[in-house]
Length: 417
Image 1 (cartoon, rainbow, N blue to C red):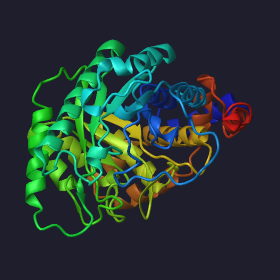
Image 2 (image 1 turned 180 degrees about the vertical axis):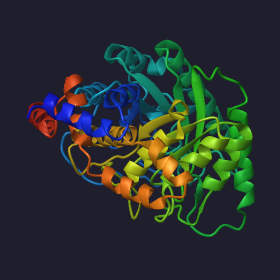
Image 3 (image 1 turned 180 degrees about the horizontal axis):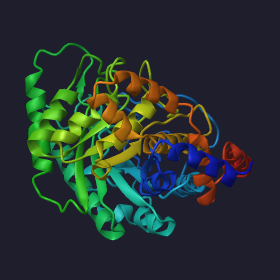
């Protein structure tokens, strides 16, 4: 049976449950995943500020072929994009600026330093998202930035945040697509602090200064991201989930949920509905924590499928910016991009193929037997036939055939670096 025949058979199976697979694929067509630039070069970036990778971040592994230049990173990204169905976005950190070899410190970074990225995005037909970089810098070496006790250091990082928002707005203006500018700061203590309140007061004040100038939300939206702890910052993180949830609700910014930034027993799928009730929007950084925030490549596991279901069931996908956040240097980096992005798309397709109305009706009527049995039966339905058909219609490899292209690219390009 060929791909089209398999799809037609699957369409009949789903139709019997009241699900229109053609409509599900139309919904999937509208989804854009923000693909993280930092997977391609192990969070290295293209600046020289005299600091190693810090902020509790590690990219374990030494798989050959890491991108060393902006051109190499873009070429690798284009190869990955060619193997992923749909139209997506690229997520940049400020440390990935194009300064033409000139030293530009973070508080003076400008939109012009990302013009070549904007031009590239236009060429490949992608939107861009942005992140100020509050790590791997001499002024972040002691573990503090916007919450630093030294006002001069705080002011430096405040200027960086202000400039980053200007870059995000210019990206949104030129590309005609809203840029999500995400703020994550690793500030915290390795050991138990004597004062938990003051750093949080300083952090809130710094953010208030950064966000003081209003920007058209059609151009740029601001988001703040929490974390449980970082390596070397184990006992106290200024930007905890409670801090940023309170900040985002009170200031009406977007909130970022990173699936690796919580206690091992917590999952972000349970938090999505609550955030969407009280915040103007949600940004996701989807990764796969193994015991903790180890940023493994996203697999189609139970939690990823739960995230997909909650996003679709919310009915508020227009308020959600979905992105990936992992950096695995132990495997082919292009393959890491492709498999992770395809998996988050698969999770959303499975959710679009769910007969949600039927499940909700059973639940409202107290028929939890139907709810459970139907939920289990859905797991074995032929969603993969729908996925393969979508890939074929988008002219990307079906099934594992994309890996052959990655291996060929590794042999002809990556192995020569």
